[in-house]
Length: 305
Image: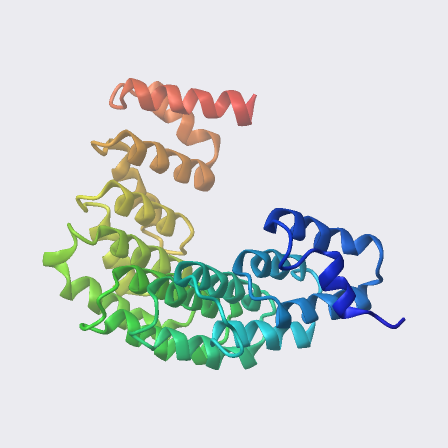
């Protein structure tokens, strides 16, 4: 089938009609074209439209096709090749969407592009966040050292980028990340009140590594006494998913935590490990508070009876 690409631009009202109508008309093209031709049309539009909002919608339309030419165009958008968008904020959003779309290909050949953007400190932090996240989702261990460098870098101004890099390290599951992450925990003690969300991500990443490592156990144990309830909750979850023999006893200590959400998460974690017995114990013993007893009864009502 010979496709009249220029005619499609005109028929969809590109450049002459409101964005919402153009996007709707492009979406309706799937009713008239087979997959191969439809992908060719999408690729043509991605190369020839200079409207960020419309491009974002087209990228989402290509999501299920995983076409190599589309991937190449997405990489060009991410790397600012052959792209002319005047609105800076919309351009950033477009590149973030492109990064997320690229990551779904799980193609190791794209790692270099993500690392290039991630390591550029002059790059917009939202793009760097998206690239760090993408590296974790692609799962290529070549990214480990660069992600560790981002987390360790004292000159890195964006804690959000550090957080995203930490999250990616957890997804990658490389044990090489253990010592650097623990070292950061030890070195940043004076700053954690301000950046507790980064500590939460480090605990989460260490938990995802799921290795029987005494250093990790010590970090999780100490985190159960942290000032941040979310850090304590993350430590409980990490212990629940671990193979540490001490995990059950450590989680039990959190049943008496001052924060109800921490107590609640400890109860749920122990229920996942021990089953009904822990619920009966909490209900029957006077040492547990009324709110936790109610939570235990609710779990029985929903999952046991």
